[in-house]
Each structure stands twice: as C-alpha cells, then as structure tokens.
Image 1: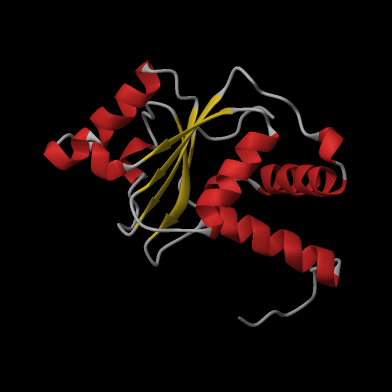
Image 2: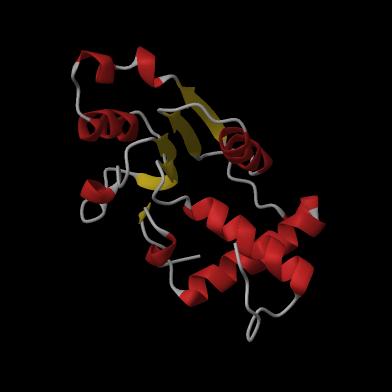
Length: 157
C-alpha cells in the first residue's frame, strides 16, 4: 500500500483507487483473521483529546490485530497542558518511535497544519462536527455489504 497520504485529515485525501484498496482489505480482514499482516515493529498511538468509546477502541483493537505496539496517551498528562504546541508534541512522539497516530478532537481541522510537513503518519479519528474519515470508510463498507453495488442508488441520511 504505497502512495497513501501521511495525513488522512479528510476522506477526500484518499483517491478512489485508495478507497477501493482499503475496502478490499477490510473485506479480506473481516472474513479471515489469519489474513491480517503482522507489524510487531510498528508503534500506534491513540491520542484522544475528547472522550470516545467505539472509535478509540476500534483503532486500538485494529492495531492489536496487526500486532503493533499500542501507546495510549492521556493528553491531560502531556505537556500540551503546559502550553506545548501540538506540533511539538507530535515531533516528540516521532522521536520516541511512534509510527502512526490517531487523533480525536473537538477542534475542527486540527490536522490541517500538518498536511504539507507531517512529523509522523496522522489519522483524523474525528474532528468536531466536520469529519470522521475512518467512520466514512466504515459506513461505505457497511452500505456495500448490505446493498451491494451502490452505483445508481440514492441514499438518504
């Protein structure tokens, strides 16, 4: 899976081809636990600035299924509370070997400033009322599983 963006801030950051790749992988992973690749040398950071149950633990369980090391950070116990910027915090995580970080925040577009020069791979796990790209992918996956081909169908939410 090459050429994926280092920062997934929006579902629009993914091409249609990349979305198809992710949907195919999701289908494969859902139907065969043995098909999950193992990434024991990779570190995943769960960084949730607001409460979440489903999203936080979905990311952590997925990382666990990939045999990744999981670092669950309580933002209230970081130097953000002393005025450190998010950029400085992310650079620290990178220096400590974090490979990918999922962040949830009530602040919209919190990852926008990192798109051109990301300190590590970042995934928007929900940013206020704006967007939740991983949820959009899950919703799309579910719709395809339930309805089949979506082309030509009208959906109302």
